[in-house]
Length: 206
Image (cartoon, rainbow, N blue to C red; front, top):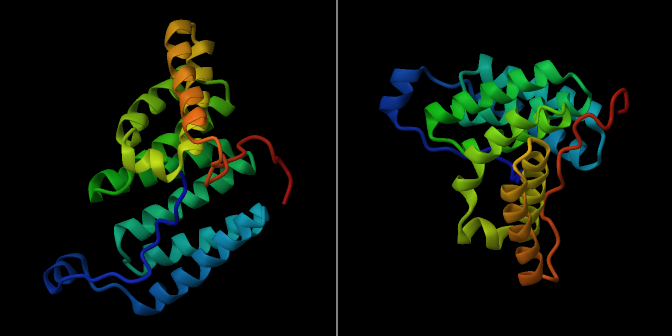
């Protein structure tokens, strides 16, 4: 469920600028350059380069006093790359930071919830994973999200079902698994829009 959260253009009112401080236009341009480079590297599975570019984007978002959603995007993306590189503690810290920023700025909190669910599942923390799935899924289980990526949604249901099964909630796991099966039947020719973040699978790899 990872659409780029970066806003390439943003209208900010004069009042908000006075309250928050003027964003540095140089940092905005630099942020965009690094974030875009990170996204391209990630799509090419060059996770080390993606991590370095997302880190630089995050630094520019912070020192340039850019919009909260830009900072949240960079923290979220960097957190995922750290998780792929098996720096799990710092991955969680950044995903939680992105979540907190999104909560304060009405951002897409479901994205961080899902990544935290997957990160915890990769560490066999199934109760924690289940808790995050239960926060995230109600936010996206609607026609708009399902039609945008039904197979991606089915994959999320499969992951949630697996976590439920591993904490002994077999009946709930079967119900969720049936939802995944139903989506695949309803959309037989669709593929997932976004791949699952491969936490814990690329330790030491570029």
